[in-house]
Length: 357
RNA sequence: UGGGGUGUAGCCAAGCGGUAAGGCACGGGGCUUUGACUCCCGCAUGCGCAGGUCCGAAUCCUGCCACCCCAG
Image 1: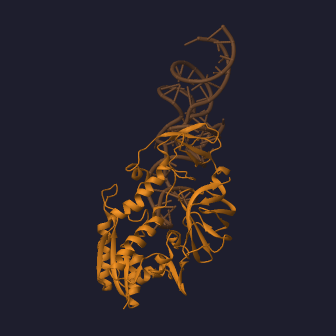
Image 2: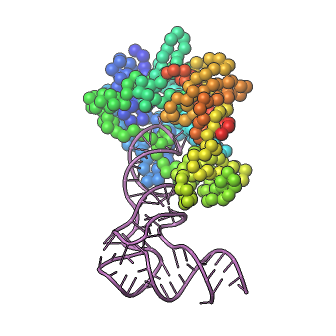
């Protein structure tokens, strides 16, 4: 019997993933990961409650469960990079890194040492194997698809992964959980950084990075306010600026970060400064092992949950130049550009620069 | 202290005698395994202050205060 280790978060998705695998006859082991030691601003450590849910679900399904702690690995390989990116004025995506470095590396290694043949998670995504290679496909539930977060995985990681819930939609998944009597059936979906949770972001970051206040200026250089520190803002952001009151009305958005002068450039209204026609990425990860061609058209997302954008990809020495068929709002360095061919997630890379306005 | 102008929520800003529009900001939700965007809801028993006229005043009258502009 093939053994599958299931990463269980204490949510419905991974609960049902474990249930389905058990029903399919695998030798299933549930493992809860605790990767963050600190509490939130209310002094609550949600991990304890989540592990309680994992225990209840595993008991119900009839599988053994364990808990592992990769807090050190998470800090070293994900969180420290995350902080460094913010210090560099960029907006990192920790969850993409978390998947390639923790869930599908540290955790996967652990699982295989424990005799697993596969590592399963509750991600909304699908793996399709034809011949010797595995392809990462979008989830059946387009609204919940999480392939964006998995774009950094390698062929060997994908080929050892299972996503049991990738073929169903959220509604039927909750129904299954309910019928199986799983305690997590009605549990609210979790949000926020994986393993850390929903936080008041500025306050959270301030615990780790020094706040260096400065001026907010218009593209023309007129000072219109003060900012608390460039790392607390991201391109395209509106809320938190605290400025308003022009006769014409209208919202203000973050257009750029001037690290050299510690100034936040803001624009009044949806000006062209918020838009880009192209971007450059760092080294691209190809889930299939190699790019389809040196130059090709495909669909791209430069942010999670964004509708597919038509684009042309031109590989370069260190990455790629991606040119969109229509202007893109708030292309943000640090985020991932993820490429798709139909339902197949080809891979992606970190956005280094945005081009054109 | 001669003349003119303006004072409505944190910021803009409607209103011109009939019982305080709107926008931005802010707060709370929704959406969401990053950060954002977005959507919904909320947000002045009171209109610089004090009197007066009137059934009724932010709107009219009087006085005072503050700020701005032009003269001196």
